[in-house]
Length: 129
Image 1 (cartoon, helix red, strand yellow):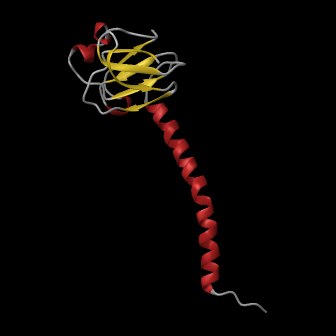
Image 2 (cartoon, one colour; image 1 turned 60 degrees about the horizontal axis):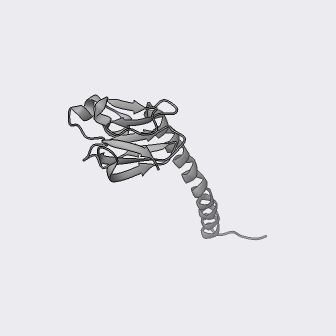
C-alpha cells in the first residue's frame, strides 16, 4: 500500500490551482472590458468625449468623421473644462488634438475602445487616423 505525504497532496493541489489562474484572470479581464463598455454611453458610429472619468459628467458626441473645432458644439469645452475620458464607437481609429484645426496631436483611440485620459487638457479637434 502506497502512502502519500501531506506535502505531495499540497503540491498537487497547488499545481492544479495555479493551472486555473490564467483562465480566471482572462475571465476577470473580459468582464472588466465589458463593464467598461457598459459604463460609457456612446451611440454606435459616434466619437464621444466626457467631462469626468469613466464616461461620467457631460458628454459630447459626434457622428462626423472629423471636427476642426469641438468647442463649436460642446458645452463643457466652451466652459473651459478638460476631457477626462473618451469612447470611440466608430469603425476607425480617431486621433485627437489639443488645438483646433488638427494641431498638437495628443493621442488616439482605436475603434470600439476608450477609457480615461490624463485629464489635464481639452480635445479641441479630431479626425480619423
